[in-house]
Structures are given as structure tokens and as C-alpha cells.
Length: 377
Image (tube, rainbow, N blue to C red):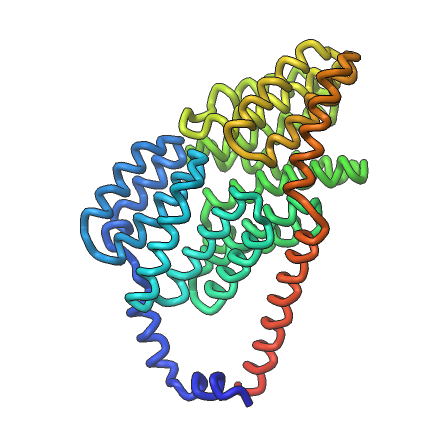
């Protein structure tokens, strides 16, 4: 018998629950301001939300400093200021350890750290942190942490184009969001699900996936409107624009894309401009209007260059395709060479294998724990 497990098993349920209650490390000021912060984020008013975080920090408690570090790290994701994220997360971890926080606080930390590694295109590290967040939150009533970790894992597997796993994790996340009645998170999950179904359709050409994509994206848009979430609404419109492209409803697709561009918050500009411009380029490409397609492909690349290398790969691929169709071979070759070098630097079989191995290890540990729990129950 594992002596650590045996010693833990001797603790009374009462003492464990009391310990967890003492160690949630929740900042009362953050809890008080949270509804307003959610409204500001949903409206894309990131700078106004930052003012709220500053007020939270001024309380001076370590719990509120933890909340500030985590929140500001998420702000810097949106701004693509990655160099400012790691110091905040390292300080958060020191504070968590120093005041002996419980699983709930660590789950939030690992979820945020996983997002940091996503910005670095370090998918094994991202998966490792999201799985750690899932482990921590599964041992508590922190179902929001579970849902966030599951949604984030779906993003990692999307990078591997393993869409069966993407949909598996999104379905688990959707179930939790519905049980929590969290309309914001549910809207975001549905939009991601719609985009995933479109990707599966493009690989399989099975119309059922196209229909599922429309249902999920439309439901996501309706929820976004009801909770007044600008960023989910933009994501949904981009999904609907791509659905329209694949069903050859080009006028409708361009209308969706233009609506998304009009709604794009200034604080989240580059990410959404890249997605809208690339979608418009693909819509014009599908109509064989290669001149307009080239203009928007270049615009998408400019936006991607200011945000994320992974986006640059897809933007360069679009530039390459359009320039080749225009028979502009020198710029097509230049785009292809840039794309190949960047793609090779970001992805490898070793990285993909590492992520799948992490997932398998997590499932093995979870199954072993389940067996032990049954033996001791």
C-alpha cells in the first residue's frame, strides 16, 4: 500500500472539508466586482476591466494579489504581450504556495498557465497544465475549472487536427456549462463546436457535419446576443461566414464577415481582423475573384504577423494559394517558403506524440485512483 495514500485516508472528512474551505484563497473584492468585470469583458472593454483589477489589487491581501496576477495575465493574452505574462504567473504560484491554497486556486492557476503556453505554441506544455487543472478541479466542487480545462484541451487537439478528441472534450465541457447554466461559457463552447464540425466536414465531406456546424454556430450566436458578449458574437459570425462559404452562399457569407468586422473590439483587433480577412479572402477565392481574394489575404497576413506565429502559417498558406491562382509565381514561392519554415518550427511528430502520451498518463492515473477509491469505500 502507498504510505502517502494510507496517511491521507486517515484524515476525517470533516477536517478535509474544513481545510479546503480555508484554502480557497478567494479575494472578496474580486467576488464583489466580478459581475461588472464579466460585463466589461463581454463588451470588449478590456481597459475598463483593467481598472477594476487595479482596485482589487489595492486591498493589499495576498488573495487579492493572486486574483490580480491571474486576471492581468489573461488581459495580456488578449493584447498579445506574452513577455508580461510569465512574471505574473510565477508570482501567483509563489503566493499560492506561501498561503497554502487549495485545489480550486491551483486549478485556476494551471488553466491560465496553459493559456500562456498556447500563446507560445508550446502545445505539450499547454496540455500538461490543462490536465493539471483538470486533476485539481475534479477533486473539488469547482466545476467551472473542469469546464475551462476541458474546453482548453479541445483547443490543443485542434492544433493536432484530432477533431474526434476536440469534439469529445467540447461535449464534456458543454454538459458542465449547461448544468451550471453558464450562458457565457456555453455560447463560447457552441461556437468552438461549430468551427470543429466545419473542419470535420472539410475532411470528410459528410453533410451531417455541415448541418451540425450550422446548428451549433447559430445557437452560439443567439446566446452571445442574449448575454451581450461581443467576442462570442464575433466568433459565431465568423463561423457562420465559413458555413456560408462551404454552402456557396457567398453574399450571405460576406455579410456575416462584414458584421463581424464592425463588431470587433479595438482591444482584440488583430486576432479577429486576421480571422475576418482570411474568411473574406476565402469567400472571394471560392467565387474566383482572385484580385479581391489577394487583397484580403495580404490583410490577414499583416494582422497575423502582429499576433501569433500559428496564425501566420495559415495566412501564408492563403497568400500562397491566391498568388499561385493569379500565376504570380515569385510571391507565391516566397509565401510558400516562409510558410514551410514557420510550420516546421511550430509542429513536429514528437510534440504531437508527447501530448497524446500526457493524455494517456492522465487517464491511467485517473483509472488507478478510481480503483483505489472503490477498494477503500
